[in-house]
Image 1: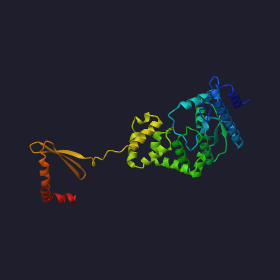
Image 2 (image 1 turned 90 degrees about the vertical axis):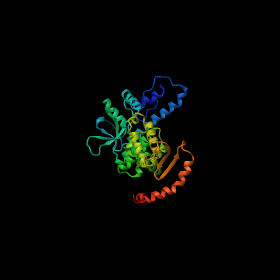
Image 3 (image 1 turned 90 degrees about the horizontal axis):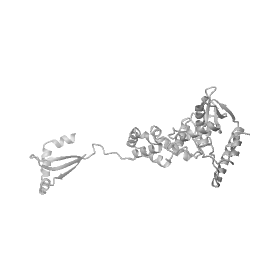
Image 4 (image 1 turned 135 degrees about the vertical axis):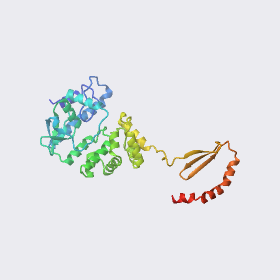
Length: 340
């Protein structure tokens, strides 16, 4: 009797474990199944049946399950994931495989250029764990073209909730950068052409250094990524965002927090340039008395008479302006200013 058959039977005597991912199931806790868990039990049974059927379909389609030295397996040439700040899920998966073995095989092909090596379409974490545990990795070996490899990789990841918007967007860009047509992006991510175009447009509009610094941002959807892309069309916003991600405190937050920090930096308006800031200086009489305050910004000038100066001085000053201007003109300074 196979291990997977035993697993199905055990579902009726032990409660379903929390779903970790499509990679593997966690060990079942030795507690009693309550009546409220019946629905979850059925769902778990259906999931195991689905996986069994998928394996049968793959074998029927020409795949063959073998055990491979994990050191001989290279990842797909088209990356679909970012580094993950949260290692909890990975460690739980590693613990599960160490205790129960690798239940779900990875999908590999023979390496197209290096004899004796393989490339994985999906299951990269399982390969890494097998390598760390020093055990062979169970794999379905199948002949796959470059296009088929990418499509298989995308279809395995597409239904999973932990693949964030920006990871999908960057994966789409990687597929096109590898020389594949837009239709391959659609097939790999199970999306239509319009959605594929949106993913690629957002990914291309944001400098990759900024995306890499932010990370997968699992709670950030297309709307806010699109808004960030729109803001970064402004060069000043790009400079502010680059300054934010270079700050030492930026990396201390989780991926979602880093997105918000970058987003806020891009949205923040810059201070007026020093040349455009009003320049203020006092006007003082020969005896040291403060007469007025002058503010200048470009060609604008604001003159504020000091409150201790008699109010009549303002009227006197206004009457003197024509004579002052004539004197300025005759001095030749006006012509020098125009020529400058």
